[in-house]
Length: 160
Image (cartoon, rainbow, N blue to C red; front, side, top):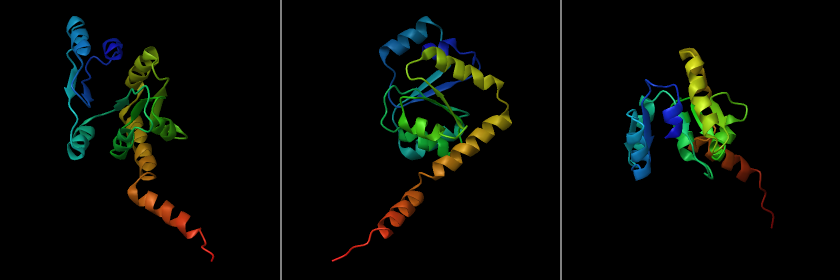
């Protein structure tokens, strides 16, 4: 909530999906006159993709996430992504990919800076970031994984 309050993205709407808001979030928002946040509970994948397609940027601020499948989902619809180093998918995606902007997990000031940096990006830059994420996400498709498993299994030779 502090990152939203301190960002320069006054005309942005922040959509937070994945549970109902904790009381302390609502209290903070009320006391700081934050009105540009919408909370949505967990939802079916089909509906999640509709929301993702309506967004301009995806922000994933996890402190600890073994993978973070939603990063793959956001990347697959071509969203530029801001992600903490606490999510391994974001760190992996960011490797040689300019479609993801990383910040150190828990570093609110750095997150605010990353959100504010988007103001300097033109539409072409955001679209290019999205294209890079689609390309990277395609490496994690079911088809790509099946091909890898096939290649791996074909490399084994059973001998009696």
